[in-house]
Image 1: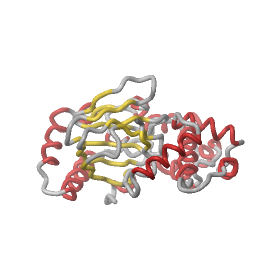
Image 2 (image 1 turned 45 degrees about the horizontal axis):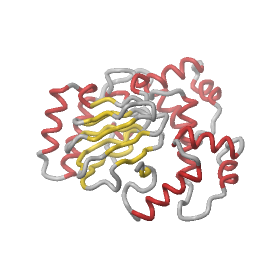
Image 3 (image 1 turned 135 degrees about the horizontal axis):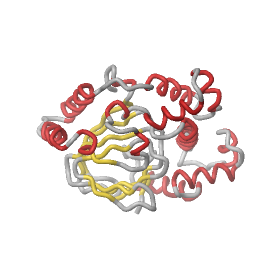
Image 4 (image 1 turned 90 degrees about the horizontal axis):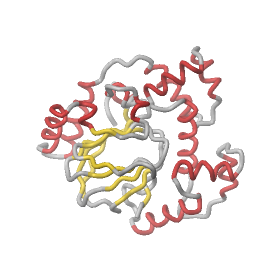
Length: 273
């Protein structure tokens, strides 16, 4: 867990090394963002079926996605990274988050070639993972800047998260004392999506995380309990977020569980091959 003031922007920092469970993993949208500093061979990302796969050597920045991403990992892989809260990358970006929505960029495009080369060199020569995470945390702290509207977006996002997305967006803007247009604009600037889209993502992620892949699933009851209009509405959301039907999603989740029991990745990423 990062220390203040980063704790209000970041869920965790991590170190990843070794053989990935699969050459390609699908990552469904979640209410989070990601920064990866790559220390191994390049990896590949495909941000949607209509987008070409791109290669990332130095790493990448991914603001909160609206569709599933496909990650292709080298064998072996080595990197350090940050799981941001949805608004977390904003103070470190030189552009509005909306420009990066479903369009990952390299770390070099965000921080510049010289700075990233120096950071990667320091990380690569660190003695142990904890030292690497401390270095990355220090770099983020050094780069942290004041961001207009961040307090508004952070507070409103917290309300959305606490309700697991089951909120009326009009009530959010009224409670914040701003117009719905102003709130949507701030969200697009700092999160990359509107409050309504963020709420949809929180609701979907909370619903899917509640599923026990080892047991039977009552889809109708699950959909109703999560506030979806009906099972068909829930199925539409499933396909929109994952590209899979609920039944196919469970088959893939169970495959991961069966082939890699207890793996650190089990829970959200899915095999793509």
